[in-house]
Image 1 (tube, rainbow, N blue to C red):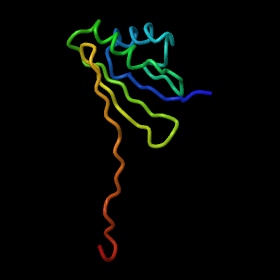
Image 2 (cartoon, rainbow, N blue to C red):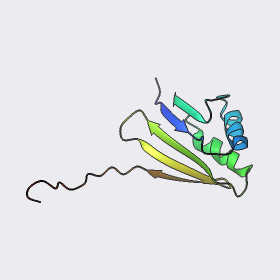
Image 3 (spheres, rainbow, N blue to C red):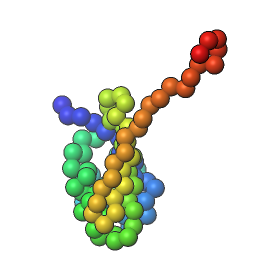
Length: 97
């Protein structure tokens, strides 16, 4: 059994979404969202797609099956940037600080 992640890239242009689906091999998705799949080569696939759309930023969000595996990635001209969620707690306001 592998690690499952939900990927959302629906914020991209339809041409980009179709190319992602063709390159990933997952076929037609539900409008740019893959729920709980094992897509281990997503970075390579999206870097490849981004080279076919020069100057266009491709965005993808991911939520893994283990908390707090939440991240966003952007691709531009074959380059990738990933940022992970940072979970913080606000200060209490009741009583002594």
